[in-house]
Length: 135
Image 1 (cartoon, helix red, strand yellow):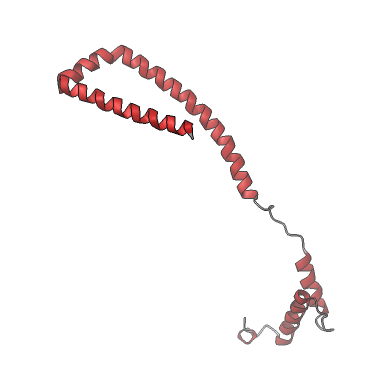
Image 2: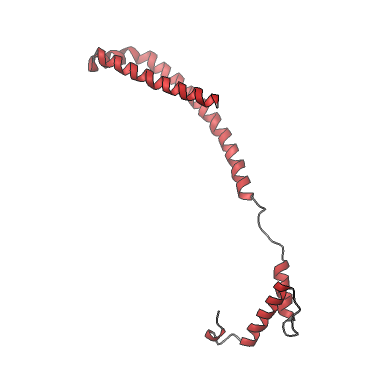
């Protein structure tokens, strides 16, 4: 900052502050006019750092992720069981009617190919699950 830009700043006072700061940072002795600014600069430099410890945010995020993952995993399992029971109930109640409607709409050959496709998707999914468990 240029002291010439602001008429309220005394250039001598400015230089005394700068000399006091330099003396505090370098460990040198300050001149008689700079002693007050040396004390101020030392007090600012020695003030305790008020901030969270290192890795604070990371540890908090990991703790929250572990807690959330536990709750979400439990809720997901419960919802999966409820979905499986609901799908079984709906399939039992309406399955024969849907099956005959699909056969009439697409034909017997198309239903066979749909079953082959569903089987391929199921086998691929089971193979992927098996590979994950092997790792």
